Amino acid sequence: MKKVIIGMMALAISTSVLVSCKEATDKAKEASEEASEGLEQAGKDLKEATDDAVDAMKEAGEEAKEMGEQALDSLKKAGEETMDAAKKAGEEMKETAKKAIDSIKI
Image 1 (cartoon, rainbow, N blue to C red):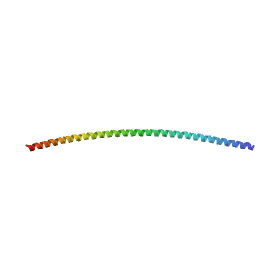
Image 2 (cartoon, helix red, strand yellow):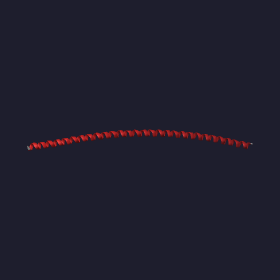
Image 3 (cartoon, rainbow, N blue to C red):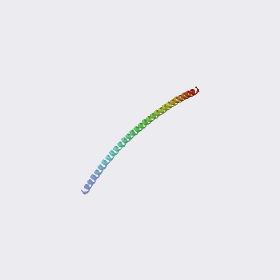
Image 4 (cartoon, rainbow, N blue to C red):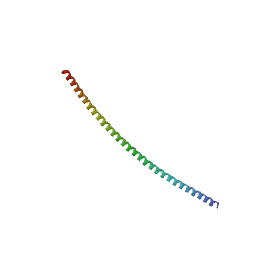
């Protein structure tokens, strides 16, 4: 009888350990799946953030290019205006010199 009781106790302990191991395995599997889903979401979020950063950089580059073109246009216009003013001043000086020479001749 003693052997039967010891055998039943050993069987009960084995069953208890087996159930505990099964529960631990299930919990570990569930935690692994949750971690995998979390990493997958983090990867998607990172890709989205990277795409947003790339778009922002492209937009900033386009704006910088546009501002550069506007600056070049402004410089070109200023240069043309300066040349026109220099030509006008040169012609006025030429005319003034011609008048001065004519007044000396008389």
